[in-house]
Each structure stands twice: as structure tokens, then as C-alpha cells.
Length: 394
Ligand code: CAA
Image (cartoon, rainbow, N blue to C red; front, side):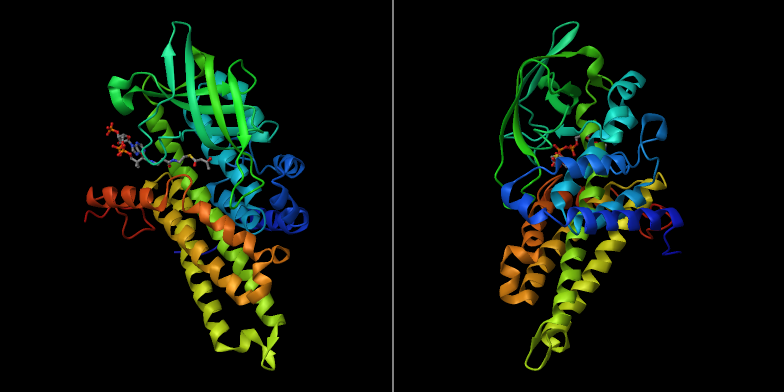
């Protein structure tokens, strides 16, 4: 067993860190306060190859592995989670799904622009009454012969207002349950696509989150992804990879808050010495470091399993649930280490605490992750020992 990154992975990690620290940090507080989408920064991330990291160069992507993607997500998430969620959705939910399940024509038309960041994509599954219960889709796509007629409302859509392409999940035949659901590629400038107001959120405030309305939108038949009825499985398979991206985001949030706490505790003095020398603070740092390291191993393992083409659904859920709970717990602790300074915006750490919360909610709540893990383990699909990918039936 090796715990070693390749030269290429180390280079990606260093490039992402440099970009986050030098180009994202300045202005992040202002963007968060004013809910300003980081358009220019996202354009640069596209130029650097961060928007289509795992897509084959044939379609304009960087052709990298999931591990490199996770490393870049971690570094960017230490600083700006509005940028990292935009990156995660575009990479995992939009580009990956299109490359894996799209037709050649769909890839040529859409993926080539999405993978370079020339265009941004959104993944439209959640609805006012279908969040965790994703099969209860109310959005309908009626087969009209040469096209589908799309009607419905999608909620909390990341990149909602800034995207050119939506992947929309909709019900085509309610009698068939999840087998009557399809996924469609929708261009946002088509007639009937209406973008609602931007959400005013607790965290990731500058990410572009909107309600989207589809009113009699004509979707050409060739824009359906996969066989008729494949939409729910498309969403689930895509989300399995997406959860690795969000787990990496949560890891980055926890690690970013930890780095700030260590730095601050070495500088701030109380009772005649740096507060890091007080056991009350030093033990907090030790607990943070231990949990973050455990989260990192789960996240890297999930990425590794995906790169090795092994089953990774449960591993992704475990990584997400643990990393997001670590992020929530230890950003609160990092604020505590900062004392009064932790409670003001100037010190970055309170923003990371607010950002942490969403990682326990989007791309499947912590409760949904536990549903998937427990169902899979009861089916005998838990992987122990983990690193050779062999199934061990429990
Ligand atoms: N891969 C392939 N197939 C899968 C699958 C997977 N990972 N998970 C489920 N399926 C299949 C099942 O095998 C089943 O198919 P068969 O009947 O042919 O066997 C079918 O899908 C239905 O599965 P379930 O019976 O398990 O479905 P369920 O109704 O019990 O729901 C659930 C399961 C796990 C709760 C699912 O609804 C779920 O993941 N909900 C959460 C949705 C979610 O993550 N939303 C996030 C929104 S996107 C977002 O947040 C993006 C953003 O902007 C940041």
C-alpha cells in the first residue's frame, strides 16, 4: 500500500493552491457579502483546466484522474466554496454525466464547450417537493413525437443563472415510477426557460443559486440522455461521483479552517504565551488534525476506487457524510480558537463555518448518505479490506 501522490497530482495540487491563495482569497469576503458571482475567476479556472478536469482531451477536457480533481477541489475549497461548488457541479454532475452517457453528437455540441469552461452547466433535479425523495418528480416532459414538452419548477439550482446548459430530470410516464423518468439537455436561451431570483443564503453566498421554471419548453428528441427511462439511474450514477467532489469540498473547508486556527493560535498570546501552548487549544488542534486526516483518507479512497473502475457508491457516501460532519464540527472549533476575531467577517473562518453547513445538505443530505450506505451494506456490498476492491460479504 502506498500513500503517495504522483508528480502530476502534486503539480495540480500546487497549481490549485497557488490560484486559490493568490487569486481567489482577495475579494472573497466582498463577493460573499454582496452575493457576487465570481465570473472572472471562474473564467480563469476554465483556462487552467479546472472546469473539465476528468474529461478526455478529445472533448476539450484535461484528461486527469478523479484524484487530481479531488486535490484541486480541496485547495480551492480552503478559500472560496462558491467557486468550488460551481467547479464541482460542472465537473462531476454535468461533464462526467455527458461524457459517460451522452451520444457523440451531444458530446460534440455541448461537452466541448462545458469542459473548457467556455460554458457552464447546471444539474436540475431538486424540486419544491422532491429533494431527498428524488423519484417524486413533478416536472413533466410529454412526448410530442419529434420533441418533448417540458413543464415544471426546479429549486436551489447551483449555477442556475450563469449556466448555458441545464441537465434536467423530468417525469415522462408517472405510471412507471423511477423507470418513467428521463434526463434532458436544455439550452437556457430556449423559449420558456425562466430564471427566478438568486437565493440569499447562509453560506456559499456568491454561488449562483436560483429557482428555474420551464414553461412549455420544446426539447428536441435527440437531447434526451440515454435510453427511454434511464433518467433516474443517470441522476443516481452521476450523483455518486458528485458526492466525491462535495466530500472533497467539505475536506477543504475543514482543512482551511484548521490552517487558519493553527496560524492564529501561534500568533495570539494570552496569559504570557501563544494560545497554541495552552492545552485547551492544543488539544482542539490535535482533534481537528486527526479527524481531517481520517476524512482525507476516506475522500482519497473514494476517488481511487473510481479511478480504478471499482464500485464506489458507498465509499463516496461514507466520504461525504464523514467529511461534511468533520467540516461542520471543526469549523465551529476553529471559530472558537479565534475567539472574538472568529466572529467577524474579516477573519475568513466564520465564512468557512457558514459554508460547511451546505455540505451536509446538497448532493444528498447526511441522512440520504446513511440510507445508501446501510442499504448497500445489508446487500453485502461493503468493501473490507478497502484497497484491493474485493467484495467481502457481511
Ligand atoms: N447507481 C445506479 N442505480 C442506482 C443507484 C446508483 N447509485 N442508486 C439507485 N439506483 C437504482 C436502483 O437500483 C433502483 O433501480 P431498480 O428498481 O431497477 O433496481 C432505482 O435506482 C431506484 O432506487 P431506490 O429504490 O434506491 O430509490 P429510492 O426512491 O428509495 O431513493 C435515494 C433512493 C438514495 C434516497 C435517492 O432518491 C437519493 O439519492 N436522493 C437524494 C437526491 C440528491 O442527492 N439530490 C441532490 C440534488 S443535486 C444537487 O444538490 C446539486 C447541486 O446543485 C449542488
